[in-house]
Amino acid sequence: MIVCLVSTAPAAAVEQNCRFIQAKADREACYKRQEEELAAKRKPEPPRESTTLESLKQMRQDDDAVYRSMSGICRGC
Image (cartoon, rainbow, N blue to C red; front, side, top):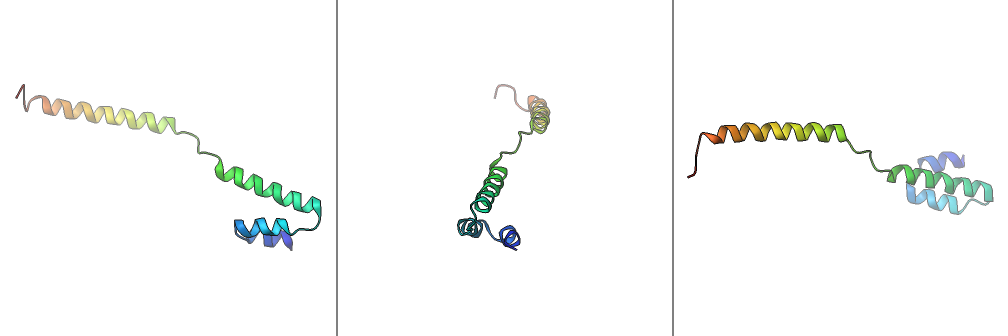
């Protein structure tokens, strides 16, 4: 029953629930679960290098197209 309460309660309430668990082993297990959940939340997303490279290539192509279109507009104005 305690596990159901812990899994459905918000994070602040979960801390309080762990604090009030009498059995030392259960309390430590509760704290360990909290640490794992926090570590999973804090883990940064892996960088998306392929997306970045693709976007850089696309920007480069767009820049080249703009430069080509501007080359006939003004020469040394």
